[in-house]
Amino acid sequence: MAINVLIVDDSETVRAVLAKALRIGGIDVGEVHEAEHGAAALEILKDAWIDLVLADINMPVMDGEQMVLKMAEDGLLNTIPTIIVSTDGSRERAERLSAKGVRAFVRKPFTPESLRQAVHNVLGLE
Amino acid sequence: MSSNDNISRAVSQVMETSAFMMAMPCDAEDLDTPEASLISVDVEVAGDKPGKVFVVAPLAFARELAANVLGVDEDDDDIERRVGDAFRELCNVITGQIVTTLFGESATVSLSPPKSAMHDAAAWEELCTSEENFAFDVEDYPVVLHFDFQAGA
Image (cartoon, rainbow over all chains, first blue to last red; front, top):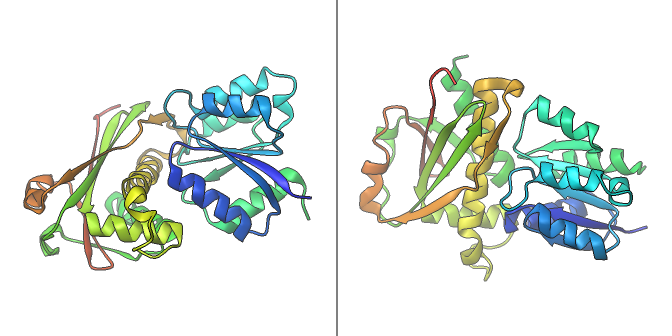
């Protein structure tokens, strides 16, 4: 079944590359929603059915960590699998985000294979 | 392997993985001076290890980078619009790699949104005056970066 994805990154180029990488990686992608920061992503999450969130950390207006904290406080949003795709390499932040429900981390620069592996692991795809 | 070698290797890896471009470390004075417009990007680093990373390259490099990253031809309609964004993102990823190479995974930092600027070719030498330059020949394009992190931070 196709999955609906929300891609949250302030770079339009990264959003395009992530969408392409999912398809190259053989993920059956349905709707792709895009947001340039966490606040815009939360607005989309109110209205759209999303199966997977891919989010950066460093973004203007609302960063990825703040967005994850908001999602964790919401009984519906905290069930949506979230993968952080970021340049960030902080172990402390990764532990903090994992405790708030983030399922996986993909470090930039990523390859379609590393993204595919993370998505498969998080969604339990074969 | 020295810290500088590790930085050069990390930057080369970013170029190759992100844009399928081969980056060869070299001395800045060995690079050809660009004859056309330049683009530069600053990324501020806040948190445990405050500092700044600066990267400059010919605009033509950024155009080829954007085409490679997006997997389209350089004359694609989208390229002109995406050149700055693609180069800013490359510098963002390079900064993340430099922070991890220098300070490891114990450092918690935040990167500011990268800021880009355009320059005439004549500004090349002025932009590359740092004694701590890291220079690369990337597919015959000169690319120079330098960074500054607060001592003892």
